[in-house]
Image (cartoon, rainbow, N blue to C red; front, side, top):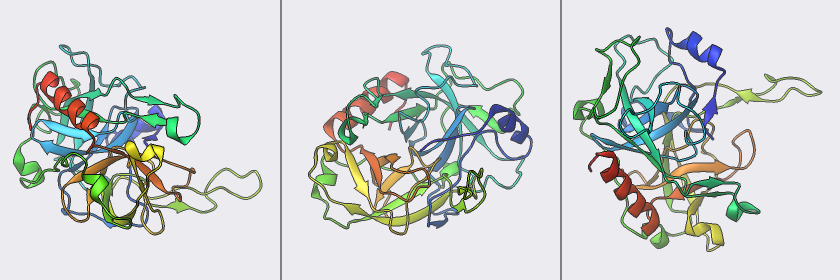
Length: 297
């Protein structure tokens, strides 16, 4: 559920809005300053959503950038891909003062997609972090140094607010129908009749480039995939392309239960599966990756 634009269009948008792609939560509403710690992230090829956990650490998904080469290069010390992020909730408005924070992307090396037959083996270990330090980080030379920086992110950028990792096993204590908060920069809607015609015109992605939020509910499950994923209803509010890596929050809190991973269907009308970050494996990998990358919580 990441989103991609052709590079020609990406670079054409550079001077107007931003180069990569994103939008908002299907059925949600404009988030404004309600979740200032949820960010847009891109590597110049794909775009996703992410959550700031501390001035030096952001949480997102492994499938966002793990299989593409960053247009921004790599960290000269660690070799991790360079990505950029912003907390601006409305990227559709040209803003010369928009702040871009450049960091290094690390994903769980056990991440695999399509490695097993059927849904249980479709996706696994879909978690990643972005670390914001000056070590090995670099900003492309054609960017304004006043609005493009490496290093820890000032608390003023998020009004001193951060997302929070869950306690281990928290998801297993939740009831069926538990309220889950979704936040992201994915596609907001689809335009019927806007696509290529081979008979009836297919719907195409509509509004994009703003941070949206909404509430959905948990589908409690004891099936095999529930050990790694939570399943969310898409009755009224759901995630779409560009919301990948964004947080699934416990009700209206800042506690992150999972990161958006995948769904069925191309028009974002199906239930969503999100990778749990409350498992022993996920929490252990996140802690180790933060230490190895030079970040801290």
